[in-house]
Amino acid sequence: MVVSSEKLILTPGQELNLNTPHLLKQKYPKKHDHYRFEDFFQFQPNKGIVTDWNEARNIFATEDFIVGLVEGLEQEVGSASSVVMYSIGYQWGLKDAQFFQQWFQQEYEKNPREMNTLFMLEAWWWPFVTQGWGNWEVDMSEHKNGFMVVNIFDSAVARTLGDVGKPVCHLYAGLFAGFFTDMVKKPLGCIEIQCYAMGETYCKFLVGKQDRIDAASFWHNEGATAKDIEKKLRNGEMLG
Image (tube, rainbow, N blue to C red; front, side, top):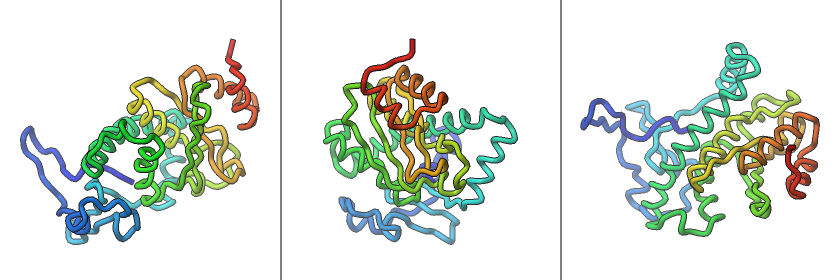
């Protein structure tokens, strides 16, 4: 879980650098296959700090932390907890898109928007895999219909909460919405239409224009399956 950049801002013009340069990165600055746990993270036990290859500060959270976060929000705001989690994820996605473009430019010496889209997306998500957020699969074949599909395997949230009979990965949905909104410079939304916490084998998200996401949300609340929702969107069905 990334919590901040490597520098804490104290006062205007003053910075406190808490970490030392990543030793492996210093030796191999253009190394791209650095996503082994031992390569990606750098531990500084004398300072109580963990930084990653991209020089962002990280913390490690237990499953109890995730359970406590979700249940605590539900106690405080009830059903609105899903909106809060989505909003947190959305702001995270907006900020991470900026951070991603910075380190991608530094590592590859190219603007990510000028690269092959799928290559760029894999470069973005691989650090998340190493950090424990799960593997993913992106399907952009329905782009012409105003949406794309993201599958997450081994979601940290859904895996922790178990089979609770409803979608729980609102943080992921917000993250995808925020990231893609910044990357395409157009407002996008995201909804989870299939979740491991519903007894499924993996989680499925739709990312797209807000009218598509609103329609998908309505159909999902009416009991439509993930396949039904995708079919409706593919056929151009919309809310009246």
